[in-house]
Length: 305
Image 1: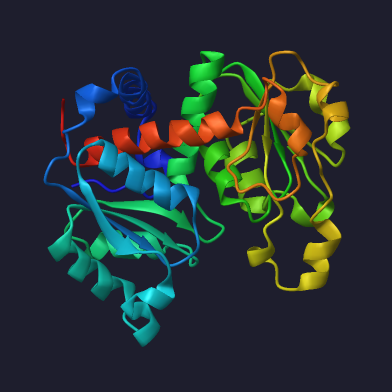
Image 2: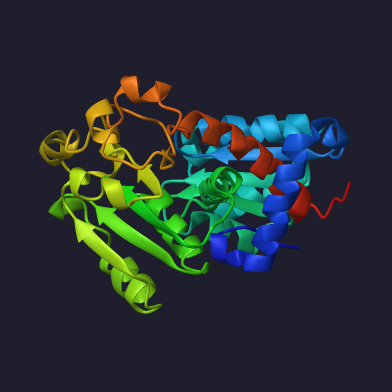
């Protein structure tokens, strides 16, 4: 039985197979419409979510399966003090696979060690968000035709942004990938990513504070929001929340084939006027998330169509 805690749980070859399957699902949805008949997905979300939870639910429903679960810790027995280990043991009696989001780093890993069913980490604190990373990889691969030989700009909250940390870990395994890390001093990438991931693997990267200084060099710009829920005080959040706003004027500095991605939700870091730019693919990215999660469910349940 396999779980997904990190994008690194799959080899590059397995990742490519998963993305191929997701691509086939996109092209031939009817072929997979009954692949999970009789199967149940449990969504255990101890933290708010729109896209991740609903896209997991849409993925299972598209495969012919059904869904049960909870959308906040308050509506589960966690509010009574039940441990994650006990919760997952009970869930294992009811469902065939579980997607779990939790504010504490490592919570999904603890669950996987006690679970009788595959567990998917749907985000654990500021640590990992592997299914968002799979979505990001599919978006880039589908629209660029490759995952190597490119320069990727990561902009905004690089300190707490689990989507950024997961994406860096996944992309360094492809050839000739360079990063430009765009953030204010207070939200720079953590040292364990800078030293243990980028420098340790001899990955080319530079850190800049101004978005304008990076635009013309990028194949992909990955925008992130400044996350209020990760801050210890409101003053720091208010000071930094509008540090980067992507506008039409800034987009004029970029290459004609640059892609703009965003894991969403957007607050105000991308002006709505950018939505009409064909290079803005963040809503398409959300759609790719359903295909990728469908492929992941099939892979972990070992269902072939």
